[in-house]
Length: 518
Image (cartoon, rainbow, N blue to C red; front, side, top):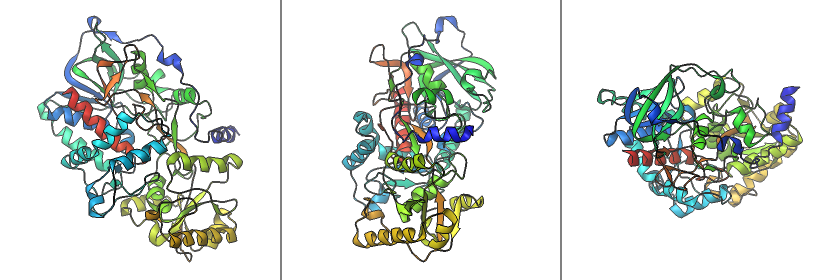
């Protein structure tokens, strides 16, 4: 009963921006240590908190300029959320677009982001992201990342196909080569340390960040209500950072306390696409030393997630690059389409929540004929998605879909027919982009996936400038020695981030942090 009540609470969300930021954490007395009061156990030039896209990009850039770099990762595995995403990276005017005759522009990219972000984006950051997208792409290629060079994916909310994909359709396609390149520098004094949790900052008398306190041999415990507050594992150390510290610790979608402070309507038992360690600890420590909070109460839900698998899984890839592009989504209660399958995430999640608020068991479905559904995806991802036998339904006909998912058969057939007529007329009733319209084979067979939005991306975080410097609420100037990049920052994406822009964001500002610190 408790689970049912929690689910009903969740469905009240409707993807809206949540309540006011809990300022108690922001205004808390700073707990940071003074450098005069500590003895440093180690000295580094640059210390980076987090080993995902942003952290590795910052580390490699700083290393290239000769700085002695330490990357700290609190979990036992590298990469956090970066490893478990779909591997798409949005870049305007990229070489694949040129090869496939896709017309794009900086202005169009920015306009798409502003539309999805409800116009509350911090445009100076957004423009920096777009301007340096090609720099990020070239940096990744130089780091060993392999892209599909014959196809750009068209993700929701983008006016054109501009998302470049790794050959394995996974974020691991970035993390593994970047990690290998960084760890190859071990002999030169560079290091990535696992199970090392950042606890606090060390400041000098001027307020400059000059080091951090950490715990080595730390073991994250997902059985605790708040690992940040309750976990005492590990051995304490104090590390000096002569040039500065980069926060690249990601968002807080798994932090039950902090996400509920931002939106009390999110129940504790709600699943998220994020890895277990996606908590607010590093973010709150930055607030304690005066960092500006930006749009922290905007939490994005992924409209491509499924109730039939835990975490991120494979549904986001199979739907975004598969059934959403080459098929449709329908309300199982009436068999009718209810959204543009390639709209921005907020628009689609809102549409799904509307159905689920009315009937929490009426999970919408998305489907496409098997010939087209997964044609752009790697065999590895397809097999992974099909392996459980629970996520992807295989139906021989529309009648079988109707029978299996409780959809009115005649209405379902009419929806497919109407969609195909729109494809032929090059005008979709829900505004699906013409370039993404593809006729559905009404005879089948079909692949079917159930939908239910999950918390995916925390839109807000630390205020940074275009140099990736963290801005102080005490001075409205950069906090000396403190930089940040990736999901722990806020403002770039506004109310809702477009798919595949996160990787660009992380790499661009990770690079910038590394460049400016080195």
